[in-house]
Image (tube, rainbow over all chains, first blue to last red; front, side, top):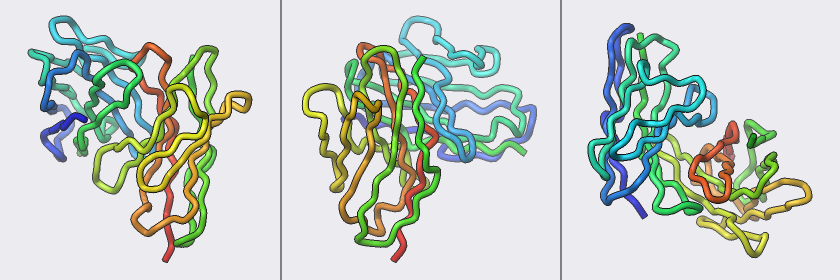
Length: 114
Length: 113
């Protein structure tokens, strides 16, 4: 298994500001994933974060809006920039041990933009 | 492209009754299939997974699912639900050899006392 800690667990932010979400894993993993869960909707992959290289973004997500850092094999951050109310969502980080195995998820960060 | 359909957005069921949560997927290649549960204000937890082998998969908390390749389905079942099963359930697929998960829209299971 993998233990994932996400911070903050929730936040209320003013529009136009930025929030950085941290994800710490209890062991080294090659890839970390960031998902968004909008109210009443399913999870959507934002990007894949590999250590030592730039993150790979999914269609509809761009680095300027969601910059990601991956300084080492146990830590990653996702920043939600220039926030608007439409960014109000739960953001989750996820890791795999190996291809085809289960994904482990953090408890998520519930973001409300006012 | 892969997609996952969970036809039922909400399923109310009485305590100790059986339940089936439906999941259908579309993919032109082989996939892995997963069911995750999300309890209120918590992250996602794996219930069960199908990678290969027996099409009937047993998971935690008494849940099981059956992979039906011809119908491209992976329905989740439990013969007798408890109040504690009240949660959001997500079906997900990934391509074999890949890590990206594609999620369905979720089914909110509410167990009624």
